[in-house]
Length: 309
Ligand SMILES: NC(=O)c1ccc[n+]([C@@H]2O[C@H](COP(=O)([O-])OP(=O)(O)OC[C@H]3O[C@@H](n4cnc5c(N)ncnc54)[C@H](OP(=O)(O)O)[C@@H]3O)[C@@H](O)[C@H]2O)c1
Image (cartoon, rainbow, N blue to C red):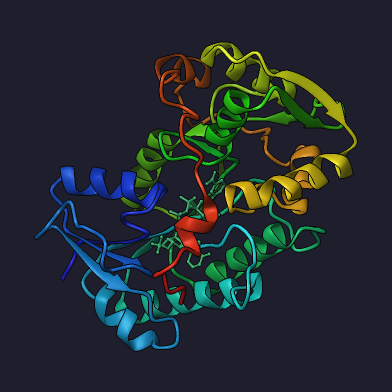
């Protein structure tokens, strides 16, 4: 029996949270698609395969835990893995938590979710939030914008491109804004919310700095010493360029919804920042490593040998 349940305990956000939980003396059971990964916390972390079509079996893994920390979601649909299916899978996780008697759920959503959104990601996230509220389990719904950290995809791959290409295309005027949060700060926030007893809460989880996108690219360039020239292009040309780049990196570089969501200023918040870490300082501290290697969503979640439930 574990003290806490985490999704993706060896993936991105969940890995940082798992480390914090284990350092504070807790035992963790973690749901993942890939239980064959090397377990850095033998005896303290139990890897359990997602079994969305078997709620009872997921409930068995959750029994005895006080808090369920949920990060499960998909970045974009591919094949049979659609947003609708990810919503159903999330509901299965909440049902299992209820059956197991979990006392609190700390759920990772997204800033600015909306049932009316033109973007499937944001509509799906709104649907999952509604399902969590309907479950009646006390909860914290945390709404981050975008994470930065050693394994992140967006900031890292901007740096990768700025290192490897003489041109850096920016969609539109580049003045739309972005307010990232450090993954360590976000994991600490989840950990803190997991200890709470009081009523349910929903809040944004963003960092202390907001950048016009083009300024963020300039900052990254400066920190890594890139001389790539920034070229502003219409959003469709930008997206087309990302499609042309896709076979070179064998990845979906960016989705059309992500381009439009960013340009619609969905990656910022009007609430007070919860994260403290300065992106500028983090970039300066990590200038030698950020963007040296491309980070591929496809190989992380759709790679050979991985089975997505
Ligand atoms: N990354 C960001 O910048 C960002 C920004 C805003 C909000 N969020 C939200 O934060 C949460 C965590 O994001 P993250 O980037 O840290 O995710 P992650 O750790 O890479 O994945 C979280 C969990 O979802 C599973 N998963 C992810 N993609 C999947 C796919 N295509 N098929 C099947 N399972 C999949 C992972 O499975 P495995 O354990 O097998 O890897 C893991 O258990 C998500 O809810 C996301 O929507 C992320």
